[in-house]
Length: 259
Image 1 (cartoon, helix red, strand yellow):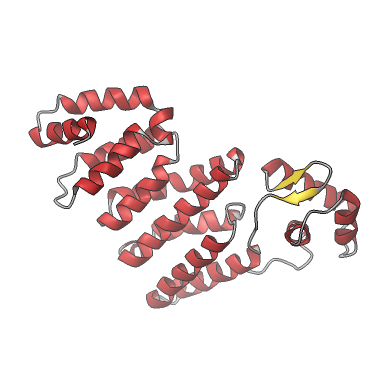
Image 2: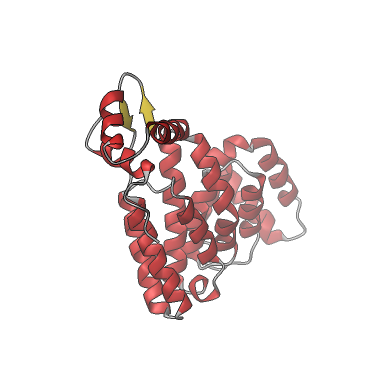
């Protein structure tokens, strides 16, 4: 579904994509497109509060934002393919979606977050190794971008919508997708993320190589998650260190000794 060309948010984003504007310049651009002053100020205020637009002497966009109509068009094509059970087309659509999310800021498009959460719960997509990995990659990139831009409100909304879908990928995926989902969990501050990582660590996965162990070490001892949940992680690791399963005790020992 395409947004109307007079959508105030898109007008403001497009105006600022070419450079910063004075308040009068920005208002003039939008009112010339038949946006009322009241509507303009309401939408501008929302963009400023979300952190997408910075206001000092000038208004400016703090990061390039892809036109949401492009994202919504891809989502519509994927949804059509799902309806038609054309899974090859779905897989291609998800690849295209990852490309667009990689080159532009997309965390402020609520329909995208909802779509990603929905796709993870569609068996035909979740069971495809490529699509599952691309979904994990998109979710990580979206959250990382907003954190790096210093937008905690947006990052919190992304985390709220995508945490459980990411946990599902982490717990029920091949090694490649699982490690990509781990990157997302490391950026959060939730005990749920800790529990999922520890559950994976305790699984009898033969391909848990030294490289994998290093990823878990970073997640539990060095990442943002490790800093926010240090006490909780310490208590959980102590519990695992006393496990009746010698294999789990050995993993914890190697994790802490940095072997």
